[in-house]
Structures are given as C-alpha cells and as structure tokens.
Amino acid sequence: MSTALVTGASRGIGRAIAERLAERYEIIAVARAAKALEEVARHIEKSGGRCRTIVLDVSDHAAVAKALASLEVDVLVNNAGVGIIKPLVELGVDEWRQQMSVNLDGMFYVTRALLPGMIARGSGHIVNIGSLAGRNPFVGGACYSATKHAVIGFSESLMLEVRDAGVRVTVIMPGSVDTEFGGHTAGGASWKLTPGDVAEGVWYAINQPERALVSRVEMRPARVARG
Image (cartoon, rainbow, N blue to C red):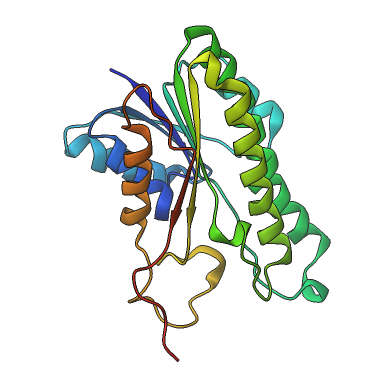
C-alpha cells in the first residue's frame, strides 16, 4: 500500500487531506498535538483506513531528520502552517520567526528528509499547501504573505529540479477557507472554501495520468463575501 505523509494533520485542512487520502494511502499524520492526532487516526481506522502518527514540530530540524530518516513516502503533503495576522508594527519578532520557521523552514526540513528517497525510487509526489496570499497582498499579512510567496517559489523551482527524476511537485493555493487558522473570521464563513474542498484539490493533483503534472492549483470560493 502506498504511503502519504501529511504535516499539520491534526485539524483543519491537514486533517481533511489525511482523511481524503486515506481512501487509497496509508497515512502518516504529523503534528504537534498528540491527542488530536490520535483522534484523526481513530477516525481513519474506523473508516477502514490505516494511519500512523508522529508527534513532531516541523520547525525543529534535528527532530525532523531523526523522525523521518527511515521513512519511505510516496506522497508528501506539506500543510503545516501558522498565520498571525496583524499590522507589521504590532508584529513581534517571535511571531515573525514563528511563521517563517513553520511555514518555510519546516517545509524545507520535511522535504529535504524525504526527497532523496523519492529520487532514488524514481517516483513520488510533493504537494505544498500555499495560499492565494502568495500572490495577493492583504492588510495585516506582510509576514504570512511573504512566507506564501516563498512557498510558490520553492515549489516551482523544485518542480523543475526533480521532474526528470520521476518526482512531481504541486503547489495548491486556496483562497479563504473556513477554519480557525489565524483567528481571522471577518466576513463570516458561509461563502468560504471548506477544508474538504482543499483536500479534493490535493486528490485531483496527485491522481493525474503518469505523463501529466499539475504544478499549480489555484482555488477560490465560488461566491465572494458581500458587505
């Protein structure tokens, strides 16, 4: 059975992705929250799937290298992320560093740990969860948007590096999603994408024909918020 590792899998988009991919893959669910991961695993196994959990802070390079060194993974979904949405003059240095270390460094650490195995096997798919904030600025998003610009650049450069080795790379860029992420709920939630919608985008990208590569998926709500 093929294996998919999903970071930030304890809730929201990450959990939805893990549960969707469990229909075809053994899931390795990664996050910092042990109890929440256990709940995800129980739900997947109750539905007939298979799930292992790893309690891990993806921003800790040494911990990532140790935890993932022996794994063979067919699909990697880099979903773990932090959003602290506030004006730059109110953003603390620790808040800046936290977003950079999780959203960008963590993606690099996890990818760097698993990519050599994919290259050696001549197959694999890396899906990085970006955001439309990676191309569309918004008030209070200077740091978060900067990290998502970086996710796009990282993903598309990596795609060119490894596609001839049989490894595909996709960046998924959702717009507004109805989660607790960032504590940002302005405008209500009824018009937003759901975590399940994003999970379907991931499913679509990784289930293309062998000769095809969907390198970027932009997802927007079908309706927009009205004042």
